[in-house]
Image (cartoon, rainbow, N blue to C red):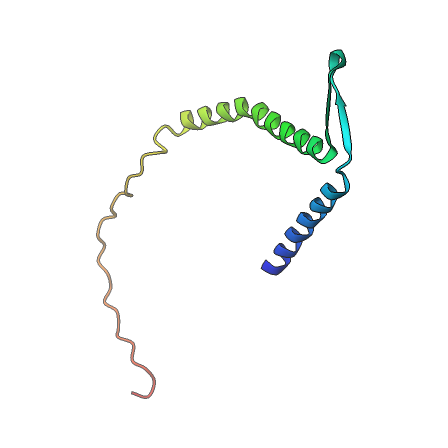
Length: 103
């Protein structure tokens, strides 16, 4: 199973590497008011991916904070770890010794 996982990872890596090698031609991103950014296409795609990732994390942060605060309210002493209460001692029945066969 480990071999299959590494095989899939290698396939994804080499596919992305081939994508980047085949998309090195210059491309331009046209912004408002006549601004343009010229760069290799692979850099533009990488920048768009990074910007989308940052935007997604920032958009998720307020919801994550609310859920975290709610969890703290529901379990205020969740961070405190105390040993479980000791059970009262109950008398045990004596166990018979196990004798192996043939002895």
